[in-house]
Structure formats: C-alpha cells, structure tokens
Image 1 (spheres, rainbow, N blue to C red):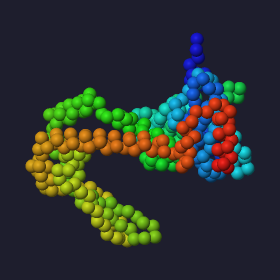
Image 2: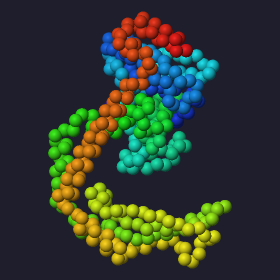
Image 3: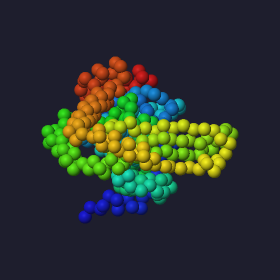
Image 4: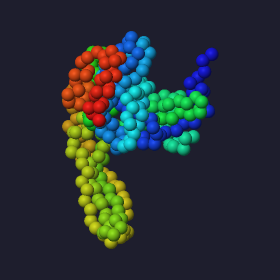
Length: 364
C-alpha cells in the first residue's frame, strides 16, 4: 500500500533558505528545447529578479532528462542551479525543471484559502495552507500585496530534511517580469478566451434576479448623513482635532452609490491639548439623513438600475480581457534583443552543448 505523502514526511525537518546562504538556488526562465526522444533539454534562464545582487545576466542552461519527458518551448519554468557569486564559477547544468503551472498558489488576501497564520515547527509563521503544502513537499507561490515568493522543496531522505529554496520579486501587479505576468494570467484565467455564452447568460440572469428582488427601502436605510470628530496627538507639534462632515452608505451597489453625492469633507483645527469639548464622537444628523434618503428614493429607477449593472458587467469583461491579453503578450517578451534566433532552431546534444558554451562565453 502506498504511503500517504504527508505521513511520509511527518518526521522530516522543514526549513527555508535565504537566497545567498546556499550553493544551490532557484532560477526562473523559459524552456528553449525539451523534446520527446532527447536525453537533454535547455532553459533560457532569464536574469535574476530575486535577492541576488551578484549579477544581472541571462544564461542558457542545459539539463539531463528521460527521453519521455517533454515540455513545450517558451513554457515558464523554475529550475535549480549552482549559486554564482563574485568569486564563484557559473555552472551551466541545472536540474529539477518544473513548470510554474505545477505550483500551488496562495493568495494571502484570501482568508478562506490561506487559513490561520501561526508559528510552526520551523520557527517561522506560516498560514495553514502554506504549512500543509510544506509538510507534503509541494512547490508553492505566496502572493503578497507587493511581492511574489516562489518556493521549491528539495527532499533529503537520508538526513530527513525538506529545504525550500526561494525566488522573490518585489512586485505583483506590474508586467515587468516573468513571474508577475504569470500570476496576472492566473488571476485572469477566466478571460483567457472570449467569454462563453453560458457564463454571460448566467450573469445576466443573476443581475435580472437581483433587480427583481431588490429591496429599495432596506438599501435606502444604509444611507446616513452626519459628522464625526477625533483628536490626534502630534509629539513635538500642535495637537489637532479633526472634524468630518459626511454622506455615507454601507451599500456595495455601484448604481445606488452614484445616485447622490457621497462625500467625506474633513476639516481640522490645532489645539494645545484635548479638552472637554474635543472628545471623539460620531453623530448622525437626523434631518440631513432624511434629506439624503429622500433624494436617493427620488432618483432611483429600476430600469436604469438594471442597465447600469449590465453595462458595468460588460465593461469589466472588456477591461479584464484586455488586461489578460497584455499579460499574455508580455510574458513571452523577456528575451534579450538579438536572442530570438536561438529559439528558431532544433538542436542535437552536441549543438546544445556548443550553444550553451558559446552563448554564455559571449555573455560572460
């Protein structure tokens, strides 16, 4: 009976490595050639966006493989390579070729997916989902607001250890590297093709049902007008008391929110200390709230509400589709000028080794 993966590694020591602390590190690039029937393959290793400060060069690497192993050209992959510092010689043979599509993706904003964050056995804080993947020796990608962290596990059965090598880019939503483009396409995978009839039809039915069952009276009650104030201490400067006059709503409906001029008008004055009349407060203005709600009710139109949401849906479809196509175009553009020709040939093993040596010698 095959042993459960998680149980298999239950007594293994798990740890992360900093990029510069180990002779082996993680790289990102494209498959240049990985054909069925060959015993070798090549990776176009895009220059590092990770933590290394040693170099910013592109190399071509080769790897050994079984003849049945094949990956399409331009597939985005990770690989393990020898770390190259100022005084280290670059090794052009790499291993552990893994398409980025094989990585689990954890969005740290999604609480349902990430689970609880707490200190684990390795002494570092991890989310439940992340730790479960680590315990199973699975590669994964953490998505943070301003960074993308790629983690690849290396298992040592003799020492009973799992070491995660990392590759980090300090951006997420920009189209300026392979990883961020890959994640952008993943986020927008729904728009990888023109929207399906069934999807659009279902969405229009949802909007129709929403408008049919829309409770205007309940929604209007979420609109309030009032004033709030709070004191803020500035050490070494004049303390200030801030006052905000507002029209607000808790409604998430974009049509309802644009019917009136919702606003937050902030004003303040300086003071030498918090006095009796300067306690924090939040007061609803009953008369102004009545005026606000009356204006919402007067301006509401069910047909206009439906058409507004339909237009919003199609505008969003168009916008997201355009963004997906931009990511798709950019993800294959991280090839240095003049290197396009190396992708237009098929190489035997001798030609592969010759290309690796000549290309990297020229770049070095």
